[in-house]
Every structure is written in structure tokens, then in C-alpha cells.
Length: 222
Ligand code: CA
Image (cartoon, rainbow, N blue to C red; front, side):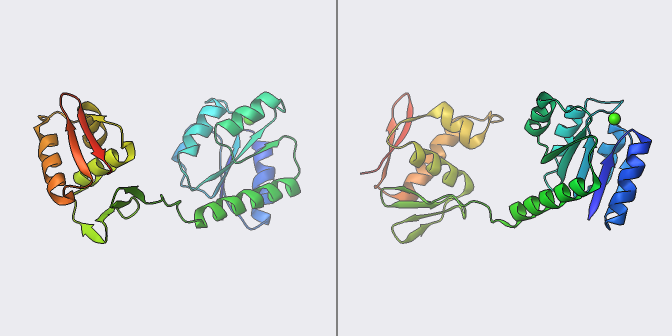
């Protein structure tokens, strides 16, 4: 288990490193935010929020971008405000100096247990989306009409999904282009017409993909 100790105070750092190594952790210590960001990934980061070269909360946010790492914020400031800021910025736990080694080890154990449980949990599955006789499996990205699989392209699937989610409301052409093709979409909106035509050919007459002239499209479920 790798632990990164981010602590500018040499005396505090030495004590921590000795205690953590005695507890069989693989420990690396750095004294600055810059070194913390360039250090190899660790399972746990013990992060002193009071560093000379950076705002501790900013550093915490940047370290938080690595989802596999648990972060325990360490601070001399015991104020409620800092604790809340630290937790909001994504710390998994918090210890206030001075703290005992036993307390720290217990907290490390607890965050490791939590992150391991979170990682072991399967990703939450989206329930199937139904519209008339159509069923869209959003996880497998497969569509069926009754029992028949519909061989849709990626864009056709996204388009049908959007219409099914919004049904019985009309979805404006701009919105479709924005959501299915994204902000980078610059080609002619004829692409949308082409996809609607091929989608209609695959879905058949029911549920009907109806054109609302000058506005967009709507999926009529019955
Ligand atoms: Ca410090």
C-alpha cells in the first residue's frame, strides 16, 4: 500500500514517515505542492493543507482528479470552516494536528476500506428506456422493436434515445444537433434529415417519428 506524505515541516514529516513505515506502508514524502503533483500515484495521500508554495485546498482539488487515490487532509487549523472546505474539495477524511499515530492509522484503514468497497461495486445500470414497442438498453446501447433487434448506428441510437426520452414532447432541431452531434457540429443540418430518414426506415411506422414543420421531431408512442 503506497502512501504519499505531503508535509513541509521536516520534524512532523519524519515522525509520520517512521510511524507509517513501521506499519508496513510504502511511504514517500514530499515537501511541496509541485512535488506532490509530480509524485507517482499513491493509494492514500496525507495532505498538509498548510504548504508554503500553494493553497492547500487548490492542491487537494487537483489531487482529487485521480479517482483511485484516497486523500486525508492534515491541518493545524482546527476551525470548522477549514474542515468543511477540505471535505467539500474532496478529502475523504480529515485529521487535525496534533494527532496520534493510532488515530491516523485507524483513519487510513477506514478510507482504504471505503475506497475499496466503492471500487468493487458494479457501475450503476440505467434501466431500459421504453417507448411504445421500442426498448432501448442504454448500457449495451442496443435497441429492440418488440423482440426484433434494431441494427442502429451510434448516431441513430443517440437520436432515438433523445426522442424517446423527451416523448411526447417535440425536440427542436437545434437541440438534437447539439445533443447528438455536439457543439462541434458545423455540417449542414441535412445530416439530421438523413439520419431521421434511415431511423424511420428501421423503426417502421410505429412508433411514428413525426416531423413538426419548422420546429423539430417528436416520437408518437401510440
Ligand atoms: Ca505545513
